[in-house]
Length: 529
Image (cartoon, rainbow, N blue to C red; front, side):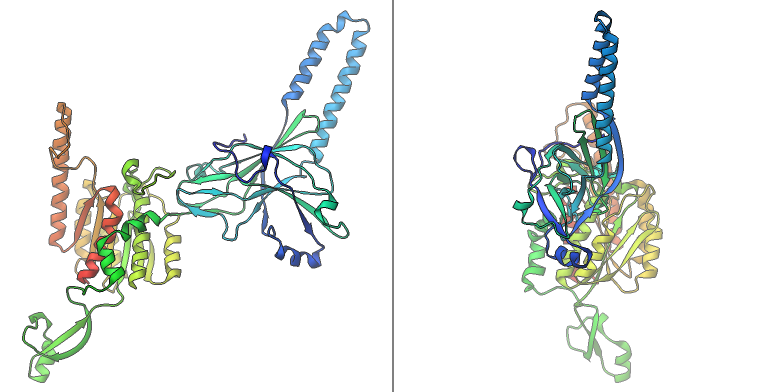
């Protein structure tokens, strides 16, 4: 059934009539040259997906009138003879009307006027889909056509929402003289533009929206519905603007990236040269083998690494399917229309924003996704092209129904990543079942990499009798005590990991992105590598 929703379509002419556009398609030798100069040369024919030929309401009324006529026929002289004539005439007219519609079923088809960058947009945006009805100018068309847009698959219903109502286009044909086109050796093609709107709700690569076209026969007794699928896929990317605005407000970012005037603390790990020992040199900086060869104390000098590696480790296990509170998950100042936000969506946005920061700092950034085992890898690299590869790899990532195995994850990381790097782990670590696996896995890599872990803080895990908390019933008191016990358990896990030189932060959803990226910036400033 052909359906669409909410608003009227943009870009249509007044009164529902579209503006006809005449195009000239020359013979095959010169056709390419003409199409290259035409604005609508990149039109893509949609693929038929189904059709339905059915009677309209007018035919039901006609049959009803024949039934009433049959009831009064016995009371009229020679009534049955006249009734047979009328019924035969009505049957012939209905058959002629149906045949005329069926023979012209391919006469008017929708096309996609492909934009230069294709069908793509960002989450929360409203996008206009440039469509048109195309027909040759051989036959004069006078009827109206109803058109609508709809999701092509059940999966894409969660990714887009059609905002345009069903629209009626009046197919007005332009005259040959007014169009300025000559018919010698050419075929005229007419386009009636139609620009429906869709809201982009969830990132991913989805099937293009389906187009429905309904035509009536000349006498209005029959209708033909056809559906068309777009061969062009719809690409919905993560909107990084709100996350970037958060990081731009961070004082650590301004100090480290914007000004770059404050000297870094700590010691670098890239060897620079040897020099004789001087008072104040640390005991750990003495090069004992060189000291033995030279018979006098020699100190190693290090320099700060100009290019370091950072890997964003994104959890896509079943815990990543956690739906966040709509009031806290959307941290932008202006609310936008989007699908329910999951933990995986927040981690994906955090990884992409962190990659843009690493790109500004000149660091190499990579990606690891995992569930019961590592799912995908992207070796650390730099440059815009590498960022596009990382963005493409995160475009279609979805939660897995399995539980995360951190021993398998860090064992694979220890084998694959030989160079010391920052590991920014983005996950929901509030489940009791993953605590032991996390501790055992961290012990495998804590000496070879710098781990920075950021997790969601559950709303109920808070100190008992927190300010602003009102307890009215016994259930409220028990809930507050349970939240206190959960807060103590999470705090104990963070302290245990701190003893292993691993930073674990539990932060609310609205602060997750900023705290995770700031943790990377702080560690880089302190030269933890």
